[in-house]
Length: 246
Ligand SMILES: [Zn+2]
Ligand SMILES: [Zn+2]
Image (cartoon, rainbow, N blue to C red; front, top):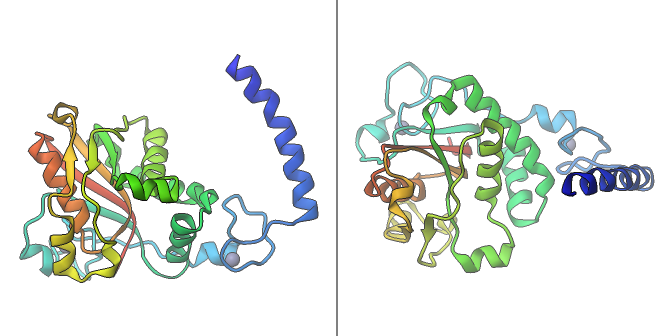
């Protein structure tokens, strides 16, 4: 019944979209030039997305100029995350796209984010190591303000692409905290401390978990979540973000 309804509904929607495209030709989300690319971005903007080339730091995913295993920062600090991978540099077009997606509701950009993350996973065979995908949770009132959790949308699309189970229920944000983007490194660590809780610890026991989020800055939030997951007897915790700073 559901399948029949879905097929029947697709036609009117696609006819409506075609008419709409004639009246209001689609334009690039970022630069506003006319474009009909599948991602809603023109070729020029797509070409400006900067992927982070290997080699990467074996912990935080930062590009290294030569093949040493860890960057200076990871050599001197404790991390609960096995590997924190990031696909692109958080600058220019991808930064603008993440802002449009996160704060202005341009959810159509989820398609390109999904393809960037999925390509990265495929090339690096990350899916072979992962049993469960968990998005960084947001505090309930924040989700109500935005009506969606952007990390959950990314995590759901990756989960679907690789048929890896998704858990959006058992890791919760239990404290309201200030936005990490307003704070320096030290304050970020304190800000997120003890703000996450594993509801059902057994959900993570013995599993290799991949945490998904949009941006890696200091890694404080991801690290705090990884600590909770390991305390719930997760085997290993990894993370994947769409973008990170230099
Ligand atoms: Zn453009
Ligand atoms: Zn590092």
